[in-house]
Image 1 (tube, rainbow, N blue to C red):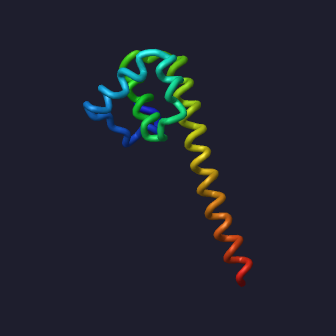
Image 2 (cartoon, rainbow, N blue to C red):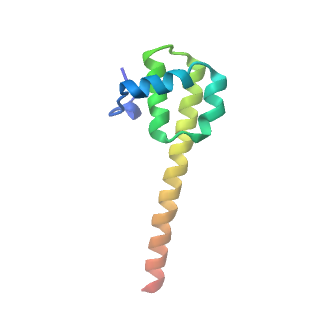
Length: 91
């Protein structure tokens, strides 16, 4: 069963080929982890769940996913908060 945050995430054949090499060991993952988007990290988690199921890899990928998502959400919140403050000042 997929975790709820992975619902709707689909791995294409090209995704599997691309991420299989990257997720072959932790050194490869770690070298590029900061470059991946939320969606790419979700695909790597899904691939790991379907394949090796290495708990330490899943844990690190999930932590990175949470960080990337949190950064995005904070940015969205700050942008919407800034817009509300600016609208409030005009009134």
